[in-house]
Image 1 (cartoon, rainbow, N blue to C red):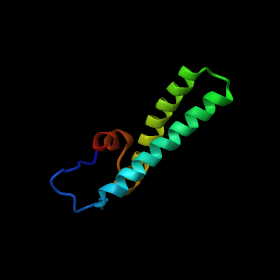
Image 2: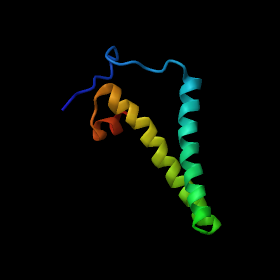
Image 3: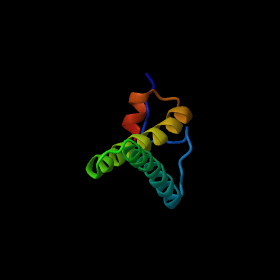
Image 4: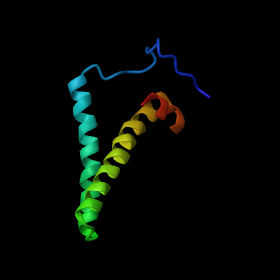
Length: 85
């Protein structure tokens, strides 16, 4: 199992532009929300269920889009990447 030392980040690159990182994270969540809302509308679900799907999918896609590059760049397993996020 790979270990990750939080005091030494020389082995991987960080996004040193917080506004850009925030914009990417927001975009990922909005994509998930859009997919959830579209599914809710497509299946004819009521407003509360459609909103719920939007929220659930925003979290799923937000984490999925954040974890995938992290797992690739740092060569981490899913459980290890979840601890970093």
